Length: 117
Image 1 (cartoon, helix red, strand yellow):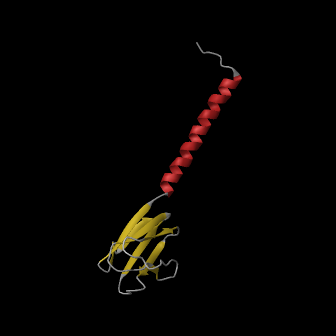
Image 2: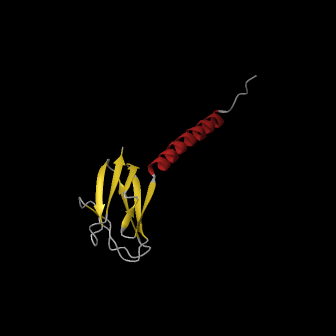
Image 3: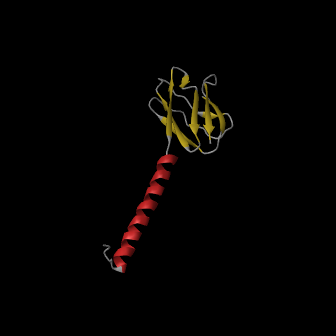
């Protein structure tokens, strides 16, 4: 036996179901698009020296060395200020490609971020 529901109750149930589906879709997208990665600066090196991430990932470099360093893209796409000990710099990579970077204070210090689609 099927119960007859008033039209308002049916509409409310449908609206609640639709809202739940839309909220889930938005939440799933936010989680997928919010990736993060970390690199450290210590003993005159970037670690890891080569970092592979997905497009949309924010990479954060943290200086754990006793002296200042920078994070400077060879293409000039990004450049940090001089980072003192425990300072950090972040950049979000939106386009696939290979991004080489270095410390402008110590140019022998180099690293690469590979961004995949």
